Amino acid sequence: MGTGFFRKIASVAAAGFLGLFIMASAAQAKVAVRIDISSQTMSVSVNGWPYATWRVSTARRGYWTPRGSYRPFMLKRMHYSSKYDNSPMPHSIFFKGGYAIHGTGYVRSLGRPASHGCIRLAPGNAARLFSLVQRYGKGSTRIVITN
Image (cartoon, rainbow, N blue to C red; front, side, top):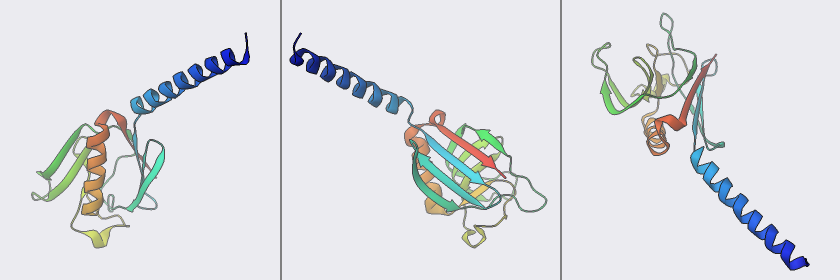
């Protein structure tokens, strides 16, 4: 067996590995959303690559934002809160009961606790995140909320 034989084997193996790598990457397409309550920030990565870091508002005194790891279960382009005076919640990503990540008109409050428990984002950032979750799917999205 000459060198040509080993080159062909190496070439076939490399092509097979590349194909497996591409298939695995597509199968593991992920949106990772990490909310840090103490810094009032959200970091988003897509397929392991940093996408954005945004200021958020979480629960103010007397309210609670759940901690833990979640998958979104419902997306609503526009939702109105039945609990809080029909308040608009654009680009809502529900992750636990009535808790959602959504856009807010109260952008001056971003970066400090101000909500009734939801995670508020600037409207454009909420729209971008909503689009990512739609594109990659709820099952490929993980939301982690920590202190």
